[in-house]
Length: 313
Image 1 (spheres, helix red, strand yellow):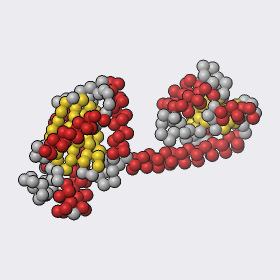
Image 2 (image 1 turned 30 degrees about the vertical axis):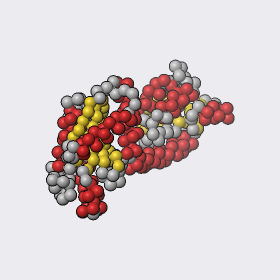
Image 3 (image 1 turned 45 degrees about the vertical axis):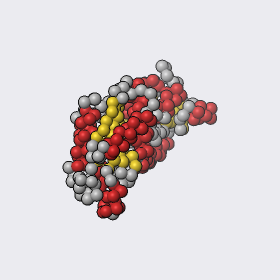
């Protein structure tokens, strides 16, 4: 495991570093608390061995900074063991209060130190497994089970974050609402299993368009299943000339799939209606944009479906 070793004595760093390396660990050194915080941010070690009394920033303060940094990360917790010259109950209490997990004396016998490192290695392995499991669960929780797109919950959370950033930057946002035309009639004619398969194909077509847009210059655009047969496409920092092209590309992508739909008016295949709103500079409240985009979607349906209706606010 990677061990961040912090002490203002180069002799201590060398001695403990050699012991750790002999046990098969990867020691990384820092000469004071301030440097330790920077190395921690850069390297994400599995364990921290922290001296207490150091110039610039002592160990207690450094650990408080480390814990504050971890609080901004999901499922982040790194064991911290304080190194102390005096093995006293007072030092243990101070170490725990500062955010540490234990302390050992610098004069600790080799067998005891080696046993402690074995225990820390097991903890590091379990922590890594738990972190991977949590990330997988979070990923699954953000996806729609049918289409594999992001779900409404993820869209709301992500868009709230993006909107705040865009407002600070004064950057644009494009919002598209997409609906499969006459989808109830599709289910009535072909059955719900066929309807599920059609939604998966529509989702894949929308994803290809958005992925292409990201490859061509956008970076945070994404598509989500809004509910039922309705989808949302979020286009942060989208140039104004690209917004209508993406909207039209979504419509065409699904039309070109040529999925038969006998009850879809004169088209004979599955089509989309698209409504959208473009805000050149993000500011104010986000909710009215959804209402405006939804109104444009309704307008697209009223005007014959299989079409795009957009507005720039």
